[in-house]
Image 1 (cartoon, rainbow, N blue to C red):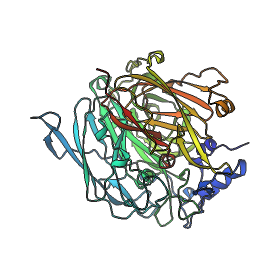
Image 2 (cartoon, one colour):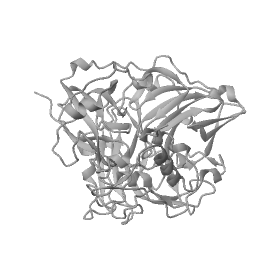
Image 3 (cartoon, one colour):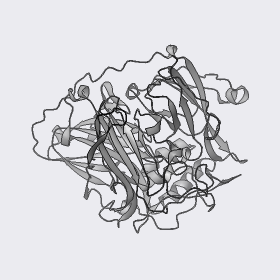
Image 4 (cartoon, rainbow, N blue to C red):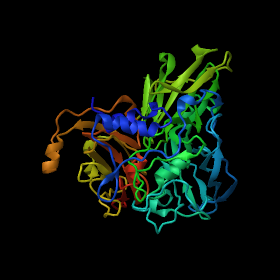
Length: 549
């Protein structure tokens, strides 16, 4: 059977072994044409790790408690820059180096974290209640992961350590969105005002510095950002101690505890097309456990991995009830036996442990246990509910769009057909802006995927709806740049019928979304959320123009 790159990604979390990265690479090469890494004119190959890596099968399972993420607290009130005479909660959050124990039997791992925590503290906000956050770069002067100075935005004349924070999924003015070129160096800070003018949703924040986002997030710069509102609160879903964010990622770690990031065999151009770890981390721990009561819990699942997706299920054929996706509540709960999350996607699920008192249950990725729930014998009275109706999701009529954009997802290959970089609509970051929607207008964007990968595409500022996916004739497109469909439109899956900010654009398909460009005019970005692709030209700026007067 041919192993496509999507199949390769799909199996990433199940790969084990001290040299898992090299083994995975050889496994992919055995079934398909060599997948290679870029140089200036030809593609390099993945270099074998020069240090012995931890084999996950060597680690004892479920010996560390799951970290419950700390909640960030405002330190003072400060003047609201938008409303004279009023004040807002002010948070000061530092990015700094830290050492973290990822597992009982792994030596301390040097990382970077917001507030020196991995993941960073959870920021809790309420709808229409603005807050101020000062993001302080207190990182060291030297990076500890391999920078590729051939990438745009990471040239040798740029400082090694740069940072800029983006709240993924937030409706914010452009000046507070964390534009990739607005990075700043250690000893500097940026103060942003977040309006929080949006529905309750599970968001997350992370670094977005041009050319090194993949390295800074891999180093640990991410955390959860939760927006709450009275409408969701009135539903009486599990809350408080029973409402738990789960930030999922994967890493490669050397036996001495050092973080390992894969590189190509070209020391001058170390970028690799994907970064797949063999250790799955839940809230920064490998194989943790969580003591729970026999009652309902809400888990906010967030994929913060560089490249890997998660195929999540529960042992004992236990179902989960999905209640929300990227941008908030679904219309009603969906029973799910498996939840698939591509990078940056979120899913809020309710798990009822009532029938498992005194037993254990596992959260699994690709059939491998990554988190054990230990269910106690007794519970405080469960007063939470799971209503059959959550929140109306009014569908956007795509025929009302004022602009239907056709946008390609491209590979730039070497002479041997090996992928060197990924592009959006055949353009680089530095090319003139070509997407310029009007404020409050409705548009549809159709992503024509010409590559062998499934790409999670993220638009800053807006929420959108998935309209459909449709197969097309690649040869007709290449010959005439004409869309010739080879099958009928495929409706979005039930869990995709809510509001989204990241969509899976499948290979060989046209994925169509619709959105209203609510928010302030200004320059934002859209990009692939496979971070290695994003850092190598698969990101473009777009400009929201003022509404017509």
